[in-house]
Image 1 (tube, one colour):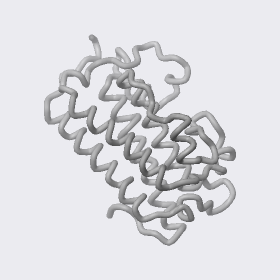
Image 2 (cartoon, one colour; image 1 turned 90 degrees about the vertical axis):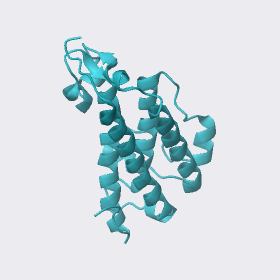
Image 3 (cartoon, helix red, strand yellow; image 1 turned 120 degrees about the vertical axis):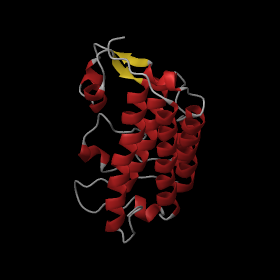
Length: 194
């Protein structure tokens, strides 16, 4: 493979630790917020924390299928429990549409996001360094992938498993945690890290 790289155990160990650490930020944020915090909308055109939380958890869940072939955890049962105002991660919707996102049952949402994170963390322990080179989406990319950040990161062969984990799970999670940290200041809460 022209774009192949060989990874060592340190790469995989770092990735596992970074994912667990990032997930712990979500756990800490959720432990210190209630529905009034996550559903607060600062002003028109500003997404509530509920959007960042639900979008990331639901996209993480869907991306796991691209990485592993396993179906998402999200189901009608979860939808009934979590009660999002919009049962859609919103990737292909406008900001105006998604400003209406709310989470009806934050406790159920905590259970959902933790189930998503637990599955990912368990799966990461099964990987070997050589697995990280596996191409999960080969070139040429379909239109919905071609315009993504992961397409910019991809090597000559396509998006590798490492690229997918880094872009779809880790970097995407950190991006939305930054939004959550900023939005927490709008409701009188502190950020998650210094």
